[in-house]
Length: 456
Image 1 (cartoon, rainbow, N blue to C red):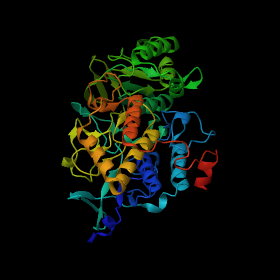
Image 2 (tube, one colour):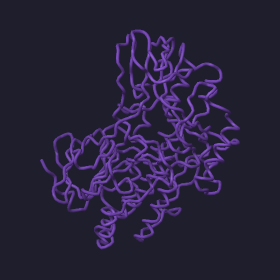
Image 3 (cartoon, rainbow, N blue to C red):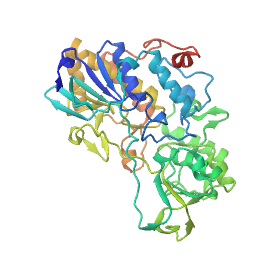
Image 4 (cartoon, rainbow, N blue to C red):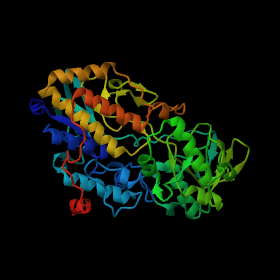
């Protein structure tokens, strides 16, 4: 059955009601753009809801960006939150945001979009009951951490092998000898849980990492960086490296390999606990895995460890399973989108949240959502200006690395530098004559009780 009523009102489809989808919804609502929003789970919050099937979240998880530099525009996190809020606070905050701006009414929960197909300038969206609803645009905002990626190693293993996406509670480690594979931010967090709860804890790494403490001189690291002068990388990097050496010393003495890349050339690893546990011998670093051998894991340096549980903290494959793969230009597992949002080949197929960036995502979502909403608004009200932006989508290929030479990996080949990205978004917005994100644009809710009252 096909419902054709949606196109006549210029309706837009948003898939997903996590932070990115909610940001898009608020931006569309502000400009009076009619939309429907679909969420496969029973509530908003995305990965921050531990009850959301498939979420990679775990009980000890916290934001790796600080309260003061994170959050949606015009909706700051309460001052009562910790410098680095817990997953519970982030979920409460996100749901409070949805309630405060009246976003829940347009969301159809427990409704996973099955298929999206383009027919001319119309988008057919199939929902679980088989109904095909028609829209002029589709915003994909379902995130990038739903398809776990695990390596394969030769041999057989008698213990348990899992991906970190299945990990929830440090009590899972009691009485076990645990090996964490990978040292991204989640791997480092989980390694700390294992260090405090497991019989023995190890981390297998392939390369060295620059570890940035969460506080510098008692100030959250990202706040410390954002409030300082906007220095070029060639000056900022040596200053930060010197500061880290003074604070941390030589990390190789704890078994970590020397990094094979410069500071800022990979996703920042923010952790203050890992060095504590390494210094106290509660967790140990091991090299890459060579193979599996019954009850033991063999490493490339010839050493072995008896292990009960291997937990792969090895990341995720990006996918948008409800959209045909050929609708996106996938390169190294990442969709090629203008400004990390606009499809170059399929009109009004938009992705929100499909980027790697060295900053808090929530504010970035808002800046991109602002452009998306104004572009969709112009299509009906200022078509000439929308056509000018269509030309940018087709032709403009900005360099968004900020002069940083990121690691040669699939993840980092899609990386953008936060400062450079925000500046370029502002440049495009100014060029198009679109409205800036000025205070009060979305309705300033700056009282500390805003989150709690919205959740009441």
